[in-house]
Length: 147
Picture (cartoon, rainbow, N blue to C red):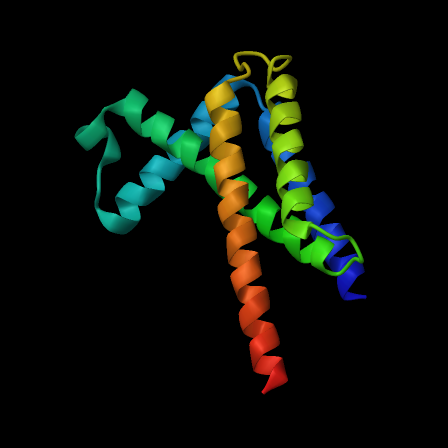
C-alpha cells in the first residue's frame, strides 16, 4: 500500500515538473513575478530593488529547479526503498539525472525556453540533497522503530 502511494507521488511529481516545463517563457515569467511579489508582501523584502528584475527572476527560476528536483529525489528514494532493488541511492539519483536531462530536452521545444546544462546540474544537486534527506529520515525512523 505504502509503495503504491509513493509510486503515485513519484509519477505526480514527474508530471508536475513536465507541466511546469511545458509553459512558454512568458507564462513562466508571470509566475516568477507572482512569487517575487509574494516574497515582498510577506517579508517586506523587495528582491527587484535589491537585485534587479532580471536577477531576481533568475534566482526564482533556479530555486524552482532545485526544489522540484529535491522533492523528486526524496520521493524516488523513498519509493525505491520499498523495493528489493539494491543500490537505491545510485538508482534514484540516476532516475533524477535522466529525468533532468529529458526535461531540458523537452524545454528545447517550448516557445521561449531552451535547454541549459547548468539546469541539469541544479536539478541533480537538488535531487542528491533530497535523496540524502530521505536517507537520514529513513535511518532515524528505523532507529526509532528498533527502540
